[in-house]
Image (cartoon, rainbow, N blue to C red; front, side, top):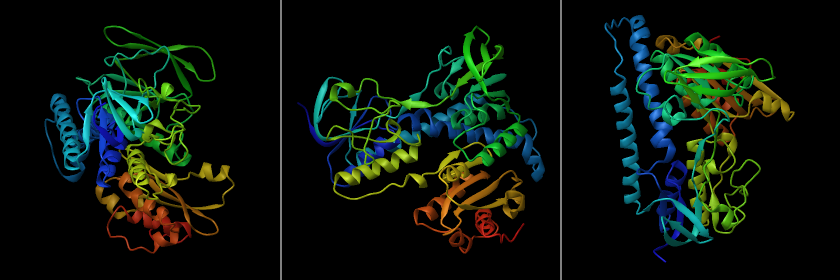
Length: 463
């Protein structure tokens, strides 16, 4: 038996590495198992960070082509250097993952390099070497969900991983799945010149989103050039040297048709990555959707084995995993942390951005909750007008009796930043009046949030 630890975290993504660092800060002897050559998991290596680098670069390209002239900035001869854009993305990723390695050294977290497997409660094997530990934390993240009949080769038919590495702009990119990942990567390649068609099984995009915001989102993306095939399923893909022939059918059944694409992005969702962990042998139970079953406090049915992040129930978001990692580490030393699932924001990093926190109107109606709505459009916001970013609005939902904030849904410029104010307000149990009476800087996009809060009481000032 090799070295012993208080905690061994399996997986060094946002949930795992943050859990390891926080546990070490609290005085525990910690190891983190990671089989990649770099730390950071899917998020930092082939997910959140590289996709945001490409989103930012592609925004600059589109701005130079189509928007700067409106500001009196004349730019001639704009050309795309995709190789440099991809190289910059790699530099951003490298900087981030090296930063995690530095933090491990700073906090004395041992990186156990290799694939981890639970031998039994209190014992973890990493590439043949076994280690003892008091606590095992499963933080192995997720993988792209496959689709029968559509074989991924990461060249013509790609997941988000291959979709970040294309060496040329496809003439026609077909995205299977109208969720966060597909729409973000679709935005990147549309800005760079691709025709983009989104095929979605359901009747609308991002179905968990507030319906009104979702419809506005579809309209905005349509104006940008996206094409949509809703209520449509993909039943097969035939790859040749030049592209892919997709077989499409109506979701409700009907005649099949063929859609030709240069590249197909498969983005129908993600599932927990649990292969090779030895969960069955260790007796760790899974839920009906193949996630590690936990008790609401990250404990599995096996004492001493815990799970967080994409491996368990809840939204598959990096920041959700981070907060769970912190909460679990603090719990292990006897603290009483609490994570409110209703104050975890979600953001789609297209442009405009889409962000939400708390409940939607549909959720409130389903549980019979009375509510009031306050909305304010960015067309009436001075800063948005100065920026030339007028699409979208802020929508707040509050209890019709107590005025307590129940949810917020924003489509517009920097929505992912604006939503933080409402997440904080909800965490403190604030009312819409609390937000409305808070002084917001002028001129700022944040004033749209204040005005939406005023609108809950029917007293918006600037519309």
